[in-house]
Image (cartoon, rainbow, N blue to C red; front, top):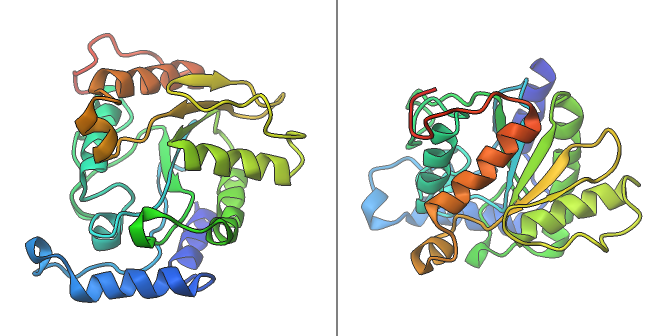
Length: 238
């Protein structure tokens, strides 16, 4: 746990991507009118969760007025509202909402991280910026020794994880890994199973491309693959 804590502190102080640091700080300075009384985080956002987790959830990047405001992954925006409801319903979260770092939320058997740790302009980190962050994910996976399944939320997170596997020689190429919703991939012996999912972005959820039931199915699958007991009543408090 100490090594994981040190790594997250290093991430918060990272300056590898000047464009992203400047953008995050500028958003924190200007703010959105609805959050003008907030003291924005405005820095790289650390990962968080259960250090004994068997499930690792990989997102894209902090939202400008979501995690960049609150300082916690998927906290303070619509995507997070969908994600935490699904995690609570499937037994991975202690409550169905995440509004701030002080709201009492705990993750059970899950750890949440992202491909990019700073809020990018237009929600689009460059390939170089993603490469700069890849080493942090590699180190997190080495420290999270119990991970059995990785859920990649969105195509960019999916490709980012596969790029890491290719960089470290775990897979020879990304051929054969075709992104789609709730698809399961056996990567290599001894490696976590990879599950791909549509991202719970407002664009996907408002158009019906991703429904609540579809997202629940992803985490039901992940719970089974990770070897956790299944919850009979999806919406009951675990």
